[in-house]
Amino acid sequence: MTLSIYNTLTRRQEPFTTVEPGKVKMYYCGVTVYDYCHLGHARACIAWDVVRRYLEFIGYDVRYIQNFTDIDDKILNRARQEKSTMEAVAERYIQAYFEDMSRLGIIEANEYPRATYTMNGIQRLIQDLEHKGFAYPANGDVYYAVQKFDEYGKLSGRKLEDLQVGGSERVNIKDAEYQKKQYPFDFALWKAAKPGEPAWESPWGKGRPGWHIECSAMVRDRLGDTIDIHAGGADLIFPHHENEIAQSEAVTGKPLANYWLHNGMVKVDGEKMSKSLGNFTTIRDLLDRGVDPMALRLFVLMAQYRKPIDFTDEAILAATNGWHRLKEGLLFGYQYAKKLGTGDWGLGIGNNLTSNTYIERFKEVVNDDFNFPGGLAVIFELAKELIREKNIIVHKGKTETAVDKLLQQWQTLVTLADVLGLTAQPEIETISNDGLSNAEIEDLIQKRQEARKAKNFHESDRIRDDLLLKGITLIDNHEGTRWYRG
Image (cartoon, rainbow, N blue to C red; front, side, top):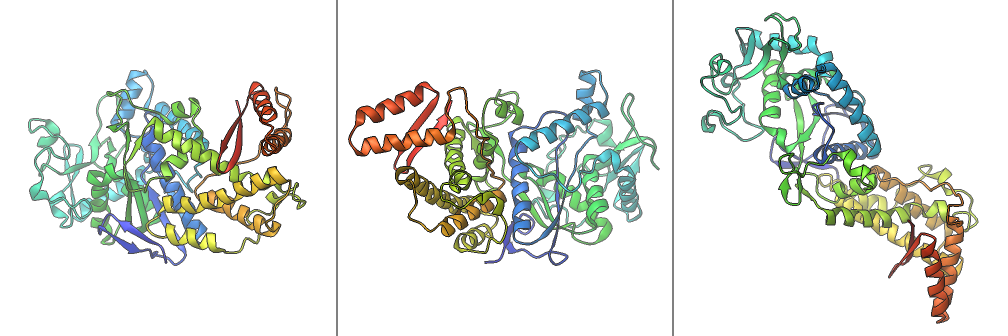
């Protein structure tokens, strides 16, 4: 099965083809930098990071652009509250963004354009819209004439005649800005300067751009007239992405993007996340509380990317337990290659790994609209087999499976997990405060298993209790025995 993806624009799943063979131009509407990133940002960034990883895995050369909105009323309000500047606030939260994404294992985009660095392109696009009759000036402002674009509403499915005044912009008919418009749903491309706010020189006087025009200009400047994938949260479909289409396509006469992809929203305990409800959680707060970044990635990927997800303590616990199992499989080669007399398997990861049944099954399922939950099922199946082999090694001191087969299974697991950004590295073998190395713990677990087989339960309990006193917890299940420090 070749890759097919659900296109918000056409409302159906379509085979994926690119403007230029073998290459993907992808743009993700990034964050407005006025605060720390929250769980909604984590969901979106992880989803599009993995889409990019998968496209590269199946052979595409991906150029991935993600913008920063660094001109916005929210940024200005934060600057006023802090008696700071828009530039200082934006810079602080851009750096915080990179810190948070690094902790989540997000690969950096090829480029991060900012609105403040794209002013020439923004003004050029507005002028093009004016010349083509799609924009009009009004006392220092410039507005987009929505009724002039016949296809307005094609992304969201909304029709102008069905929209009620105030539905998209919550306008007040007595408001001075509203009165400048020729039609209620016309939106601002350029805003006249206000006292105390940053402003740029323009053909219409000093001012700053509207939000929607920023992304249209950045896409055009960095990727050209038509791109392959335009991605973002479902909350951006209307009006932001709808307005991007109207702006860009009115000028070029070409599709802005051939595929529009949107991730579902995040709820917290069934409620919409908001500061007023007290359930607003930032990425750094969550990770600082001890949630493993890989468990958070796993939580996000366990749901289909277009569907909403509900963040609960139970869901995170389930994801954490799942990550522990997967991590156990990912560490198999690092821990047991030398015991099996084959040297360091880690040196061979990614080298000469030929396609196999697991890889083909993984691609077959993920090619169905980026079905990452289905891909995870294949990965966990591999991990389960390696954990079973680990328990055989612990109990018998050797494995009955051919070492070459184990090597391929482990390298396949590491490779496929890496496509999803799920990675684990072995801890440096040191003697901890409890005086036991990892190898010594494994030897004691094997002795405990031997004692249990001999029905010497007093000895097996003694080993378990001694380990517990030293901070080592054993967990027995049908797959064998796992252990954790702390």
